[in-house]
Length: 215
Length: 219
Image (tube, rainbow over all chains, first blue to last red; front, side, top):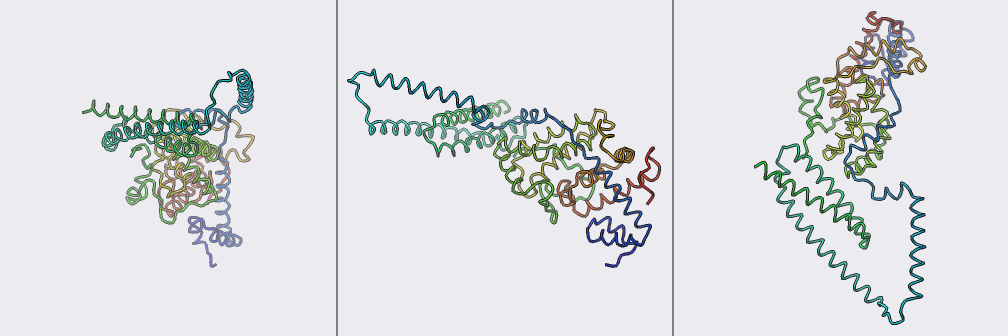
C-alpha cells in the first residue's frame, strides 16, 4: 500500500488495522510520523489505566431490593437445602410412625375406600376446582376489559405503575400456569396461582377506582 | 406502553437531525455489535429473555457479567464512587422499568450501556456531589502516574461527546460499532469524535496546560 505523511490522519481516524499497519511501516522511515504514532500509542496506554474496579459488596443487595421481581419459587429450598432435607426426613419418619400405629390399632369394621372410588372423588374435586377457577378467571378478564381504556390511555404515573405491575403479574401467572399444566395436583401451585389472580383483581379494581376519582 | 422520559438521548443536538429522529432503541445500519467484547450473543439473549419475564436471575446474570465495567464507565463519567454506584443501581431500575420496550435489534448489553451512559449524563448535568481526585491505590498500580493525572484533568475539559467516546473506546475497549449503537450515532461519527478527542487531548497535554505532565511530546 502506498502511504505518505498526508495519509496519517486518515489512518488514525479510520482506526483500521490495515491502514495502521501501513502507517507503522511508513513510520520506520519517517521520524515525524513515527513520533505521532508513538504519542498516539502512549495516550492509549494511559487511557487503559483509567479503567477502575473496586468491590461493592452492598451494591447488588441495593439493586435487588429495589427491583420488584418475582423470587424463584424454590429459593427457600435451595437456600438451606440441608436443613430442609433433615426436616423432610424427620417429617417422613413421623408420618410412617403414625401410619403404622393407626394401621395396627384401627377398628376392624372400617370400610376401606376402594381405589376406584378414591380416583372418582379426586377427579370430581379437581373438576370442581377447575370450574371455579375458570369462572374466577373469566370475571377477572371482564374486569381487565373495563380497565383497559384507562390503562392504555392515561398518562398518569400511577397508572404507569399499575400497568407495570399488571405486566409482571401476567407474566407470573403465565409461568405458574405452565408449571400447573405439568403438575395439576400440586396444591401449592394452585394456591400461588389463586393469590396472583387475587392480586390482579385488586390491582384492576384500584385502577378503576382511580379512574373513577379522576373523572 | 410505559413511557420512560428519563432515557432521552444526551447527544440529540450533536450529530444531525437524522440522529434525533432515529428510534431510541433502534440500531444503525452497519453498526451491528461484535460478539467479542460486550457479551456472547447467546448469553445476551438469554439474559434479556429472563429479564423480560421479570425473573431476577436475568438481572443477577447481568450484574455478574457487566457491573464491573458499568461501574468503571460511571466512575469515569462522574468521578465519584458513590455516584457511580448510584448510577449503576438506577440503570438496573430503568432496565426493569423499560424492559418491555427492548426489541432485540441491538444487543441487550449495549442497550443497557446506553441507559447507563444516559443516566450518567443526566447526573453530570444536575450533580451536587464533589468529584474525587484519584483512587487510593493509584500509586501502587500505575507506572505513569503524572500522565494519568494529567489525562484525567484534560478529560474533564473535553466536550461531553468527545469525553464519552474516548472513555468507551480507549478506557473500556468498546468497538466503534458498539459505541455507535450505545450513543445512537453513525459509525463514522464515533470514529470522528474519537479522533477529535485524541487530538484535543494531545494538544492539551503537549501545550503545557497540565502542570506536572511530562509524558507526551508535541505532535
